[in-house]
Amino acid sequence: MSMSDELGKLAELHRRGVLSDTEFAQAKARVLASTRSEAPAMAAVNALRRSGDDRWLGGVCGGIAKVTGVAAWIWRLVFASLVLCGGTGLFLYLLLWILVPLETRPFSGSTPQVQG
Figure 1: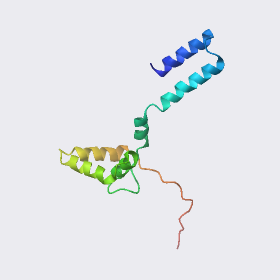
Figure 2: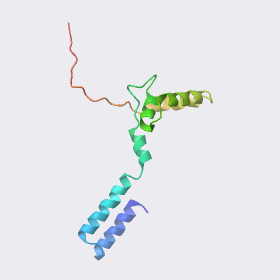
Figure 3: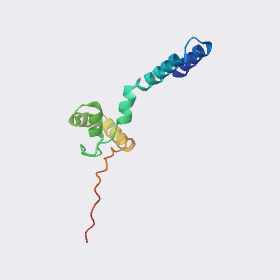
């Protein structure tokens, strides 16, 4: 059942008087909260960023390592072995390099000094 269907059924129960105002508000909040935490895989995909620190080429393997918890050298080995399988690893790496954004670093607060 989709979220809109569930909310529609809750509204119908509220309209008929089966649910009080507080019960309706609590049930609605529960439905809305459950849909946000339903897809942890999507949260991991959205958190994927190319690494600025752990990088050899584009930071793709370092970024995947941060999201998955698997060491970056293992991801580098996976991509290198996929390169030997018809160039799939190279294609996938380049695609991720283009599509995955670079991680942003927090502002340090210091400004560079220009001398001269």
